[in-house]
Length: 412
Image 1 (spheres, rainbow, N blue to C red):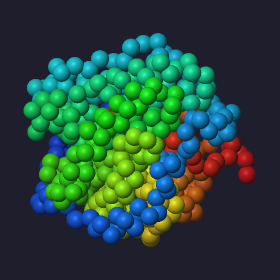
Image 2 (image 1 turned 180 degrees about the vertical axis):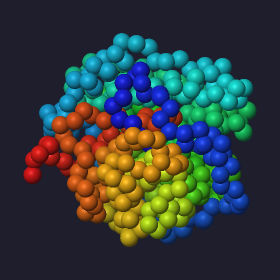
Image 3 (image 1 turned 135 degrees about the horizontal axis):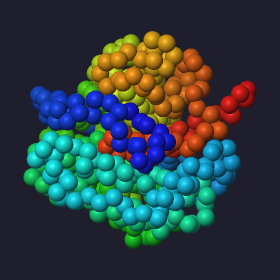
Image 4 (image 1 turned 30 degrees about the vertical axis):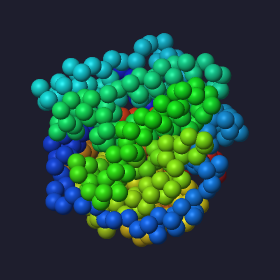
């Protein structure tokens, strides 16, 4: 589940028990054959025909920060004082420290917070600085952004210790893709997309190298071999499938185009084809009526990532491939409204706790796309949302949220 606009001091309260469950069930949740469905070269070629030329890549929910018409409108209609204040605090303090001892603590004690708190705070700080810079457009936070990005790129691995117990060390987990690594790759790639030439050329080259080696290469290797090996989630049936497949796909698409892309146009078609082939396994784990046995928060986490990745595919292919079309997708998309006991109150099982609040963007997207009930929950008068999970910030969800057409509260 995402938690928008919490202070740095309170971001890491244990908001749902499902995070603990993931440590227990995730690595072995999907057993059986490791083989993956073979991708059809003809299908990959068809998708490639519908991608824009390299000069028009990448494509995202929002334009980059250089499009001042879009971002000045956002700046004029959202509340920004809190964002600027938090970003300035982040700029004036060093990134939180991560050490090998903290990484190894889970293996020794089974305790997660000592590593995961600073690990997640690093991406949250990046998000505060990134959106503050993009909205203020004054260059004052660029140096701090470079520092935060470099700190993340310096991490031996982007995966969480709880998911890497089969690897021998922090360094040996460098090319292991889990929930945290997929989100980090997407966040870092999006920062590059939004800022563009405002980042130093050497840093942009390094972003491409790190994302390629940590995420894209190991993923494409498994796709081409037809063997998922230790990436059990690739054809799994729970939320990991949508989150990890979606994160790898989005990182590749965001770092495509230009003179030195991390993913070529042909590889983008391959990534899209893989997402098309593998995410039906995730959808098969959800009932036709939308029911998610993991609870409403993991419905947001899993189906939210499926929605964002599928919408990115639709945008990239100019509507040719729409993986959100279909009755089951519509039913899944409006599950939150049908699953309420009363407005805003959900059955307390799985990962749900009393007072669970859902982020507005998934409901609002469904309302706009499918004509769901309940009206729009978000407005342009609120604060800029910085969404996060206990393993990472999801900065891309902020752009997805800001891209939705909304009116001021009370407007018609």
